[in-house]
Length: 145
Image (cartoon, rainbow, N blue to C red; front, side, top):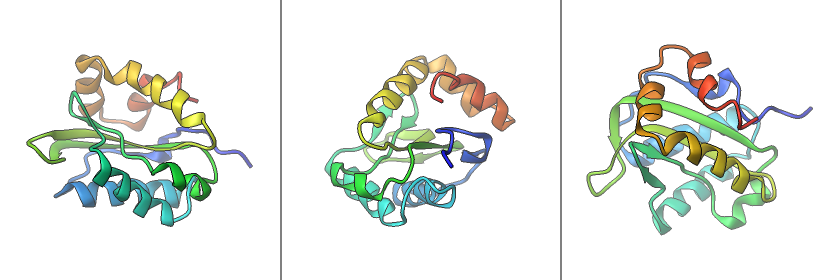
């Protein structure tokens, strides 16, 4: 069975997270629970964050595993976590939209470029952060699946 990269079940609305580590662990757990990655992927996401912040600007962070985490990926997938109150990703960088990525092979590059197109517009990010349904969020990422 092949999972779609993004579905309504991968989206969490109005989450309150207290810090970057909690945010990454929660996002990774969604990927685990939905069957995209093995649980060891979460530690690789935290390792990746230590190397370089996955904060992208526009209130967006895109946590993902290190290159050697590919063995932990079962299917390419996304988890989208909406954090309207924001979570500090360090250096005063507040994140309100967390997009966790697991890419099989080199698929993460294509997934990333599709996401980048959406979140490069601050207006899109603001609409996603204020969305009240998973379907509303999904509509922004139609090109990802």
